[in-house]
Every structure is written in C-alpha cells, then in structure tokens.
Length: 278
Image (cartoon, rainbow, N blue to C red; front, side):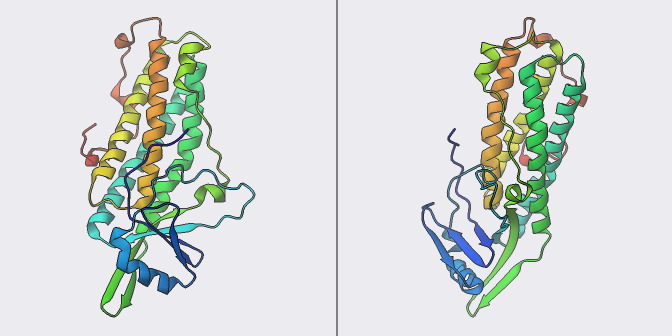
C-alpha cells in the first residue's frame, strides 16, 4: 500500500565514508568518497537540502545483506535539539505504554476478538522494535557535534539518528488485519472487554498522531529520520484506529455504555509538550 507523503526535512546520511545529500528529487543524490569534501560541499546547500518523501525506512532491506548502519546528521541548533529531545521523551514511553495495554488485553480471559488479538500481537512485536528508534536517536543526540571549518564557512553538524537498525536485527514487521476483516467476519462475538481495549487503544493512538503531526508542524523540528518515522506512525496508527472502529461497530450492545478508565491507558506522560494535553 502506498504511503502518504510527509513534509520535506533537511537531512544528511553517512554510510561508511560516503555522504548522501538529499535533494528535492529522490532519484538524484550527490555522493563523494571523501567525507570532509562531501560535508564541506553540503555546508553550502544544507539549508536547501530536503529528504525525499518516503516512509517505512526500516523496511524493504535484503535479509541476506550485510548490515551497514547509516548516520543521519542535522545542523547543530539548540531549538532543533530541544524539539528532538522532547519527541524522544514523549514517544519512547508512549510506545512502551502500548505494549503494556496490549499484553494486559491478551492476558484477560474476557478478551474475545481474534482480530483485536492479532492487532495486540502486532503492536507488541512492531512497537517493541519501534521503541529502539527513538532510543537510538537519543544516543545520537548525546554525541558531540562535528564542527567543520572551511575558512569563511563554518558548520556544526549534530548526529541525529541511525538508520539500519532493522537490517541489523533482521526485523520483520507483523501485519495487521484490514478494517474490512472486522465487518466481514469478526470471528467471535465482540465483548465489552474488546470494546474497552479498542476504545482505550484508539485514544492512545490518537495521542501519538497528535504528537507526530505537532513535530511536523514545528519549524524547529528538522530531523529527517524522525520525520519519516512520523509518516509511518501516522499511516500505521490511523489504519489501526480504523480497524478498531470496525470492531466496535460490530459490538452487539451499546459501545457508548462501555467505559474506559484512565488508569488503563498507559504511556501518556510527556505527551502534553506536543501542544495537546491528554
């Protein structure tokens, strides 16, 4: 399924000793074998460079290929660093909260829906991997910037992310059922516990969507890697919300009567900095 395009974010990636400077054309990249020459050239056009719109940045690798981690760089800027740190501080525990909610649902004997159980298992597998992405971003942000001094031109570049974690871990994403599956064949009667999980996880997912969109809208947020991660979050979690809404629609009772206690929604601390209080 094609992914929606995210906004363009400036980014540099270093793979071995090769620098890739993204332009507006995703088919055009400028490569130089000498790192210093490449970065000096990039310094002139960094403000105009943009990452091509893409997503699923940790998918589509060759399982038999050799892992080659790629470092993403951004201009060292206090406002950009704060935006990235705020994102990591909010999204990392938020993903962890989704794992807790999914595990609690699977362990509950009142859980009935095979579709929601498949979703919960996918959340545990996929978001366990996704937690590692902001973790790695945080480790990069703790590294000192690299300062390039080319006479009149001086540029400080901050390590911003590492691409290739999926290749290193041989990660394979677990797919989720489509929303039409819940309407065509729910597989078992939908219980109040199913509705409770679906409603609670929908609220949880919506907070992640709000945070991802807020990062895109923040002019100080220029981390191209996080921008692409957010395209995946917006795509995947919007689809999962549609699936859960379909399950709720098949509930034989009144779904509005099913209450979700706030204590059942985990990982919401730190999300308010995105501009939304949850």
